Image (tube, rainbow over all chains, first blue to last red; front, side, top):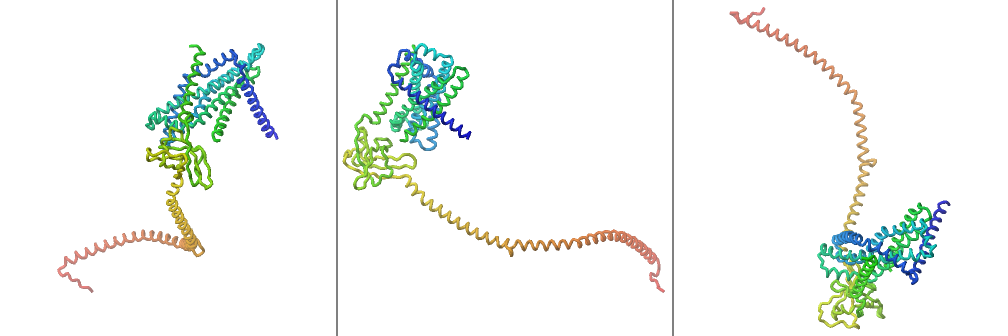
Length: 260
Length: 253
């Protein structure tokens, strides 16, 4: 009976947590589509957030993209050549690398760098009662603090994953020439033949959903911090675990959508 | 450079990249081009799917738009070809459904004479079917037959060996078999050997006694040797006495 009770408690807790996230997401979405949200203060915060999340890490992100992308493309092309599946390299490049790996790697990098930072920032603000201070001055915390961060997540993930794809396709030119002896014209033709418009749209939509949730979840868990300093690591670790679960769930859902 | 400018530059540049890439792709995929629809026929719809690519010289020039079954039971395959690829579809073009062993099936267009007249939209050419899977199975079939034959032979040999093993078992381990007889012989031999043990002891005893007797014979022999030497000396003495006499003849009493 105790085991059953524990299982029941865990499931109810999970469902409540999920419902809480969905309700919070709905609240944020309503604010995003509300014109009154976009005040000058909110726009300043948004620009700052985009600067910290995307522009500031751009050189490092590009270097990581070049290194990781080249390695990935090189290994993949070599394997395709060894298996005699050269004719499918376009499909692999577009279907797997560009539409699947690029958003996934980007979201992992941004989650590790910015997701954890935002989670901690919100939790610290909560502990220091900065939220209460803002509310005392009648400043809408959701509009001023949360919405810019979530919008920043969407914009950053979409733009950075596109850049990652561009870098990967650039590496592809080099490796297709080295491994398959392919000219740039032939390479672009193969890519165009393999590119599926709907796949690219799904990849973009997936990036938007990724960006929304990888910031929304840390923000939500950051807000759950109590007024004790010891609650900060607890909410940060819980938030990050939930973010990774969300990333996997979104990946699986996008695969299911692609199947249909 | 101000922070706002950097952010603006980043967003605008990346947004331009995305838009240009999408527009280029849409244009190349014929999103803005006029499409022509041709109808092909086949006896069976097996292997055809909506959205299947139509290829010419390895390049995708269109796709299957719709599959229909007409009143005569023929499968009608409607393919959509953008205007820019219309030049590859001629009246003498052949359409082949290619189903590779690995990878997706596709319709391959082959045009021998590119100067021929264009294919009218109301003409319905038939699709030939090339099936790598069936071809492979046909190629592998004789080999499979041989393997089956070898397996049957092996089974036959194995059953024979089983029968032989049964018989050998009866001959070797049966009540009248070799092994019980060998056991019986061994028991007999064992009994006889046990009976031989006292005899061997006696022989050993005799041998010991004979050995001791031989020692006595040695002493006896040395005595005999001494006696013979003495007799020889006496004979020599007698011989020397006889040789000194005038008449060597001795008269015995």
